[in-house]
Image (cartoon, rainbow, N blue to C red; front, side):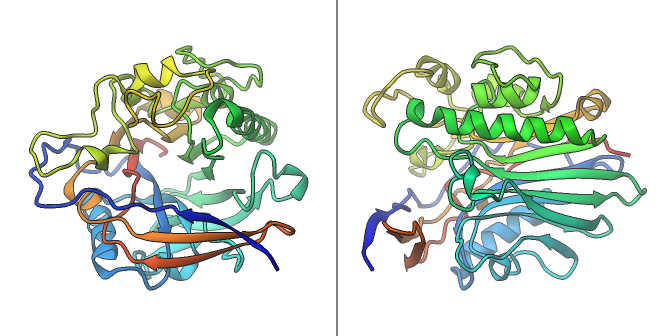
Length: 347
């Protein structure tokens, strides 16, 4: 059996003693649901204790009720950070190392869950096992909400060249949501696109022909995180700016403008990119929920940034497409992504 080596994906990150001008966020209010999305970069069972401790610290500080996760090896990995008060929606496929899932903290109740878009004929839009987790959650007051955790195709291979995969995935998800007609819907995950790129605009408008740009046409879903991106907040790549100096936050001037500048262009990464930091991790909610009040935050405090990244070696069977992942070096940093969370009034 021949395997193609794809290389070590998790490179070393900056570390050291840091004095951070951390972006403040409010305490959770009892009449709001706090939902987080977090791509926990190649998180696996038996991971480094310092890394696990940092992720737990993030959860302790932010106190989310629901967490949509991506890039998870399996249920055993999640049980390192979610104790018995958490219910976990995850298929736990033995041949997938980047699963999506939803964790629900009691007294919220995870009623049911399923993966959608699982057919092999849909692999262009949802390559490998990047299927969407759909969870039915009941609030303490008895309200039902539908939560989707999603991890879109990366820009690896070229942003312009892979745009159609993300746009197709967004269109299929928009169609599913529109046809199901659920009242309280939240979509969260690593979009691998910015909030004003075409894929996000497709989900927001329900129009599969929507283009990139600042239209904010929230007919189907409202983008709770778009305001943050408009202010130059970022959710990935921030670690490259940390060298122990004070005053670095998740707000990177020029990040939105550079993403806009390169939209629809064939360019080299990183040579042609002025600001590599960008906003990928997004939260959308039904317009009725958005109208009741919803606000999002990027968590850029020390537990999300300190430490070193690990290394993995990914091999792929050129005949079957099956992948194997070998964790060659454990890292201490929580992730290359920052957690993003939103307070949304459901009750």
